[in-house]
Image (cartoon, rainbow, N blue to C red):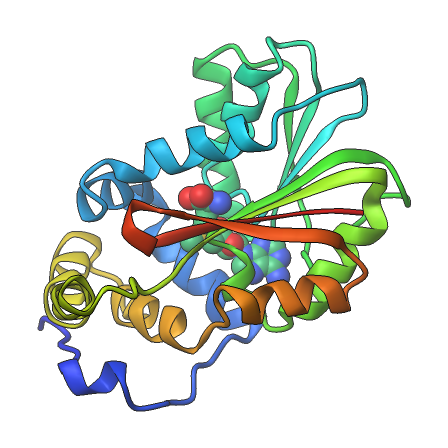
Amino acid sequence: MVAMTRASELTEPRFLDKSAERIRRMFGQIAGRYDLLNHVLSLGIDRSWRRRTVCTVPPAGRLPVLDLCTGTGDLALAYWRAGGGGVRVVGADFCRPMLQRARAKAARRRAAGVSFVEADALALPFVDESFQIASCAFGLRNTSDPDRALREMYRVLCPGGRLAVLEFSLPRHHLLSAIYRFYFARVLPRLGQLLACNQEDAYSYLPASVQEFPAGEALLERLRAAGFVEPRYHAFTCGIACLYVAVR
Ligand SMILES: C[S@@+](CC[C@H](N)C(=O)[O-])C[C@H]1O[C@@H](n2cnc3c(N)ncnc32)[C@H](O)[C@@H]1O
């Protein structure tokens, strides 16, 4: 049975279960098809967003890079490539099936300097001030406590270390916004459910979670509250995604 989300559901607030168990189970169910779905549902644009993230916040120096909520490791691997193989990258996620894909991908690409760690973004198993960059693509929104995740990223960054958070947002332009909302509410959940066949309804959860998550200035305020300075954001693809950057 294909799950449907009414367009109106995108404007009605609804309770989203973001408990660790639910999120871990949901991503565990779609791990095998996650990459395919990402590329199909974003028409391949997600790759360019990760590339732009790495170009905007490039590695510099010797300390490792942390990619939080790394999933199947695409951003971690992009950082490893950007560092010319000379910068160590650690990908962290609490969903084992996603990490298994990430490790297999890194092995296929002979990315020996990338390691993957099973860890909760809300209680990172890393010492203070040990990373030069903390990145997180499409993950912060899924944590049960994004402010705590931001504080953890702040803690493990070295002074002067940089934060790069990539997240979906809703375009501001009126017509584009209407088209996008239709795609998000009607097309994406059906297509996603059809391809992923997961019981947790991940592709109905996606638009709902994007709608309720702070974007733009509101998220910059959360970065400031976590202690970061010089926060700013770059809108990608007419505001469908935003990259938030800041300094510790
Ligand atoms: C939408 S995926 C993003 C994966 C990847 N960063 C990308 O760009 O495609 C979100 C990931 O966040 C992870 N995640 C959510 N909450 C987490 C938490 N509290 N600790 C660690 N990982 C978490 C999920 O397991 C999932 O792999």
